[in-house]
Length: 69
Ligand SMILES: [Zn+2]
Image 1: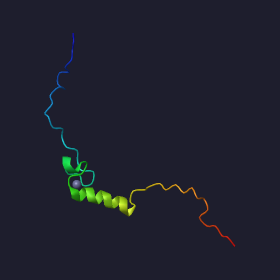
Image 2: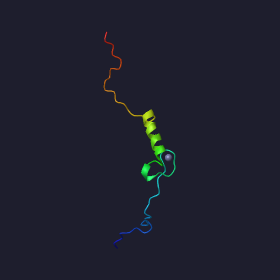
Image 3: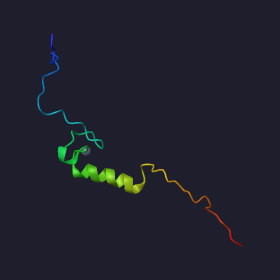
Image 4: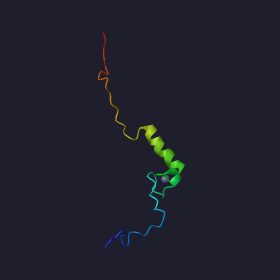
């Protein structure tokens, strides 16, 4: 009873179905994974640059308004 194969689940077609581009939903390209194209990759980068993604900024200074008079 050495069942090394799981019937029905051993059919490997070689290529996995491409995941949709995280930007536009089109099938992603391996070259630009997880995007479909450089365009979408650039869009994502732009999002970062524009600050659309909330990047937590840790301010350890504490004193943002320090009057030294
Ligand atoms: Zn895309």
